[in-house]
Image 1 (tube, rainbow, N blue to C red):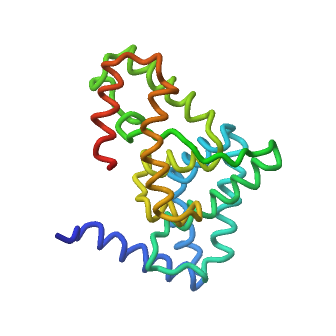
Image 2 (cartoon, rainbow, N blue to C red):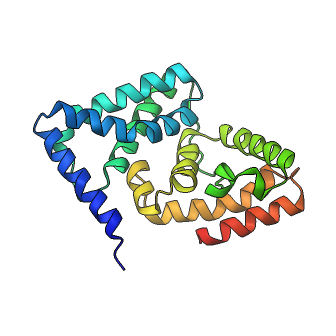
Image 3 (spheres, rainbow, N blue to C red):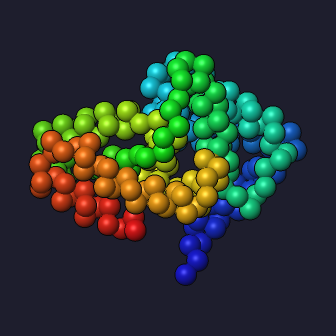
Length: 205
């Protein structure tokens, strides 16, 4: 069954992008307003510094709009923005510190990132989220990007592959390995909490 709401939203965005490609400044502003929160959230988790994240976000939008005529509407505009932002993040982080090339990362279900305290005992929930983010922050930039896109922003494997320029099969393999690695890095978490993770990650495939 086709989601008519989503289809209508995509069509409205295609119209908006067409206006922006024709030089409509109001359409450009609306695109920025529609995507700033999600893009900044992604960039901040990558850069881990507010001022740096603001600079990267602005740079990503400038690069996107400078090449807006190359955007193909058969793709999601948000995925295209994530791709540009990811590349800008990598360039920024390379200037600050060397990167490792290892691609063996943790991934966590969206429910864990955004779960209300009613789903877990209050203090345990807060402690668990702190441990999760501490683990995510230890990952390489490609690793963090994979985690955030799949579990927090619900980007599918095909789109992650496009953003990171990896084969889809590689993305799926990495997400599968991530669930096993998660247990290692969060081994101090109680078995009850780990059961919660396993239940939530089962749907990821």
